[in-house]
Length: 142
Image 1 (cartoon, rainbow, N blue to C red):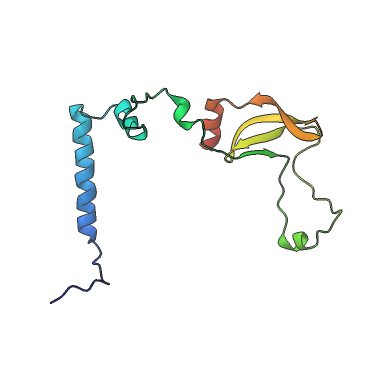
Image 2: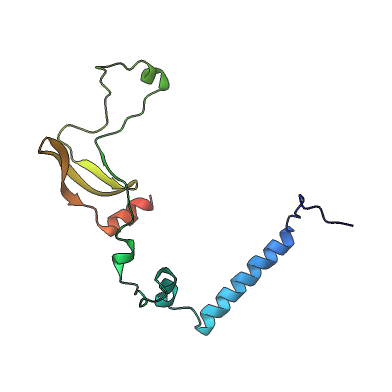
């Protein structure tokens, strides 16, 4: 009897559970015996074969990663019915107050607050308060 190439059997729930159990056992044995690979060794996979290994403190490997920086003036929730009624000149009320610092977010995470400035006819933001790492963690746990 020939195997059907279109039909690949699904792994049974028991075999998946066994795989997880084996992986967890292997992990706990590695941790108990002290054979956990050092961070330097783990980062070697990100370096060129001929170059020297990068260290954990070498931040250069992430310096060129693009992120999205957003300055948020305010927010509001309105029904679709009101959105469809908007026209040129309409005013949408936001929850932010005039003169209140604006939020600066990196990839959606609040990192600072600041005030709007105009430099060479372009808008910018002057940072007035940087959110500490401990405060960012506290906000994430909410």
